[in-house]
Image (cartoon, rainbow, N blue to C red; front, top):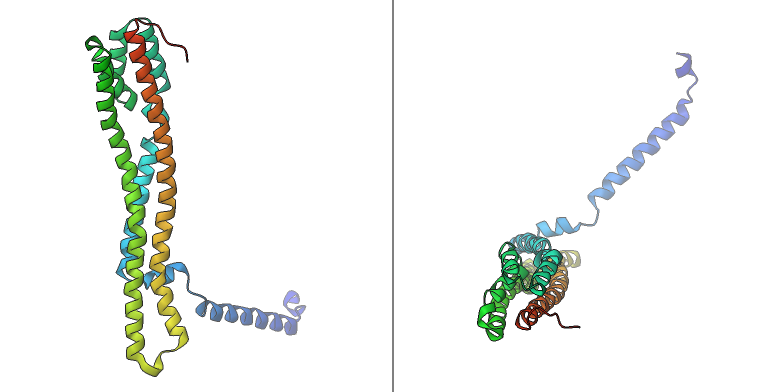
Length: 243
């Protein structure tokens, strides 16, 4: 009881009023807060949902490409060294077995190349070119899908924006004098959110697709050099040419 008697109730009441005032002000401010991106996206309509599904598909394929299209998976360093060593030792059968047991890009192309060792240099080079083009197409097709999604996303966003602007102007024409500047601004912002979403999908996908293509081009060039070196060693009797 002494503890409660020592409390300055006047100051406590003022403090409580101040807390309630701050709380009420924050609640009112929250009610009048600026709409967030998610709030605006919910009002953007069906095109925004299509863009969100496109983004999920695009970034899922992007993640798959980043996981599967890695240099050490397409061109295992140990396999490249083993194939060259076997060819230098004249053990074409050993190199052929090593290539056959590896499903990588290098293993597939090397197996096709070495399978034609008895038919001469031209046959080996022809097999390298044919199988190399097939495997390269498989890789570039994955990157091409990313580029396609990156190209479509801004178009879908622009479509959503055009639809939203048509609806906004239709509402303005039907509203007459009741249409105010804030209502016009809200309708336009809702329409433009689709274009923003499309650009946010396209920009990272374009960057990742470009980096992947540059990396894959380098890896394919190294694999081609490996196979051409094997052709030179096999056709020259097991002697590796100096760089």
